[in-house]
Image (cartoon, rainbow, N blue to C red; front, side):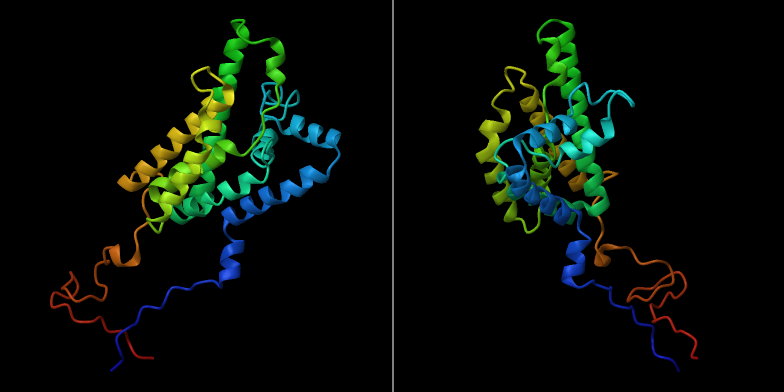
Amino acid sequence: MAAPARRRPALRLPAPRRLLRDPAFWYVTVLASMWPLLTLLPAERVAALRAWASTDLGNLRPWPDGHPVESLVVSAFVPQDTIWVWPVFALSVFAVVGALGGRRAVAVLAGVQVLATVITEGLVRWRIEHGALPPEAAHYVDTGPSYVVVAALAVAIGRARPVWSRAVWLAMLAVAAPSLFGGVADGEVAAVGHLISLVAGLAVAAAHRLGLPPVARRLRPAERAPAAGTVGTAGTANDPEGRPERVPSR
């Protein structure tokens, strides 16, 4: 008589390989590399890079007049001020990946980057058309990882594990809050974008907690309902007495 079938243990990659597969690792690494890069490059090269990566109205025009996708992507890696701070704050992306998974974390944070940019640049366009800003405002340089990082901090505050780490992310956001949200009352573009990112991140954290798609909480193996006819202590449709399922011998 053959022994009952045993469930194979889950395959876990070695720690270095898991790290290399984590999008948070690559995001933090690239942000950290921008610190020496932007410091060592000539000033005119840095200005040209920021002008090309800027998510202003000029660059967001459809091809071939602009390059909207390239600017939306590259802008999230090119900070303007306090370059060394952003890799530290971006460590919160690890918490987002831990809660949502790699693919959903990338999709959520990229979506926030697009959402905040579209709304804020739409506000710029509206203000230009109504005379509140000069026409040159359509080409004001706007780059940086702040929309992504603020959203990541918000998700981490709500869903990071272990629970005590949420206090760390909350403290980091509180320290940065005066510079991030200081111009909201005056309609400052960056401050409004940071507020949108914060609200979007908190909404994602709430949806994840409530199990709402597309960021529903992933069930752990112990929480998954056993399929009919599988091994268990309770009876199933195929075996009302709950006996272990036998497999044919070879």
